[in-house]
Image 1 (cartoon, rainbow, N blue to C red):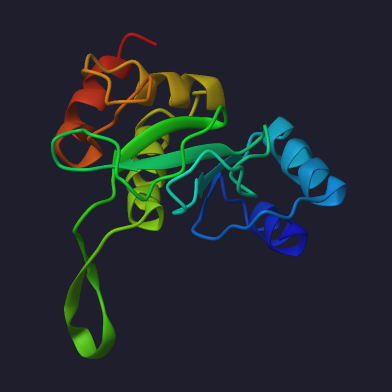
Image 2: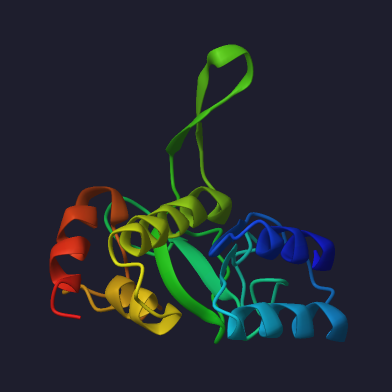
Amino acid sequence: LIAAINQCQAAGANITSMSLGGSGQSTAERQAFEQSYAAGMLHIAAAGNGGNSCLSYPASYDAVVSLAAVDSSGAKASFSQFNNQVEIAAPGVNVNSSWNNGAYKSISCTSMATPHVSGGSALVWSHYPQCSISQILNSLTSLPLSPAQGFDTIVHLLSRKRGMILELEDI
């Protein structure tokens, strides 16, 4: 992961989107995420699919936005991790995704939710390049939506992305 962070940063990336995780953590990884975050890189990672409150890394590093999944009604997905590191949730149940041989498949996991937030962040940042990471995150978490069970914030990026851009005009 450290090499990937360095490569993304060297290429000028502002956002990383990660659909991986496990229970192991390392000081070197934590420091790499902290240093790149301090330099202006936003890291977003799937919280995990164990349906429990265990921490999963890299999502549970403080310099990484931990992302959970909700269903189409905004309820916490039964498989989604929930812990004090989860900062935001997005649609992750029955998401159509490209699959083998040009086909599509309906998939449910926090990895399906992650690109919604990563893509929404990139969309906002492309329109407002002067924004800081905290302003980008505030734009995603301050939408007037009802909270789902167990989460402070929900983002329905696919249907709300135009509203996010309009709300940022006040920055």
